[in-house]
Image 1 (cartoon, rainbow, N blue to C red):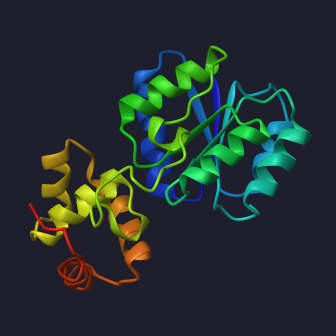
Image 2 (image 1 turned 90 degrees about the horizontal axis):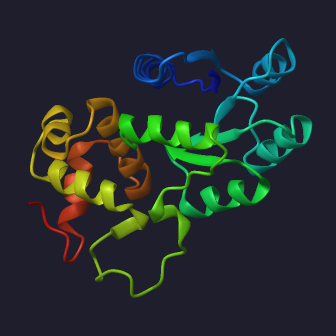
Length: 210
C-alpha cells in the first residue's frame, strides 16, 4: 500500500511513517511538507492508495484546498488530518468527499485501523466528531473553553503538576500525543504556559484536578 503523508510537522510525520510501515505489511509512506509538492507527487508516477492531508500545512486554505485537491484528483482516497480542527471541520471535509478524518491525538492502533478501513473502501470519522453536540450533553464546567474530552482529561492531570511523560503514562498515550493536547489546551484557554493553564483551571467552576 502506497501512502502519501502531507504534513509540515516533522516529528509527527516521522513517527507516523515509522508506525505505519512497522504495523502494516507492505506499506510505504512518502512525506511532503506543503500543498504544491503534494499535488506534484500525486500527479507523478503510480497513484497513491491513500493521501493524508494536513488541514493547516503551508499552501492549505482550509476546506477549500481539500475540495480543490479532490476535484483535481477525484479517484484519490483522501484522508484529512489535524492537530487543532474542531468536529465541524471533520464533518465538513467528509461532506466534500474525504474518506476520513484523523485527529493527530488518536492512538497509533486507531490510525492503522483507520487506514486499513479507508484502503478497503470505507470511511473513518471518530465517533465524537460524527455527531453535533447538544447543549445538555455534559454538566456545566466539565469541558470548558471548547475542550475535547481528552483535552479536559489532560488539563486535569496538568493542573495536578504531572509532566507530559507522567500524563502519557496515566492515560496510556505517547508523549508526543500529550504535547499536541497541551498545545491545543493552551490555545483554547488563551494561555502561554503550564502555570497560566493551572491558574485558569482554578477559575473554572466545577473543574478540578484529579
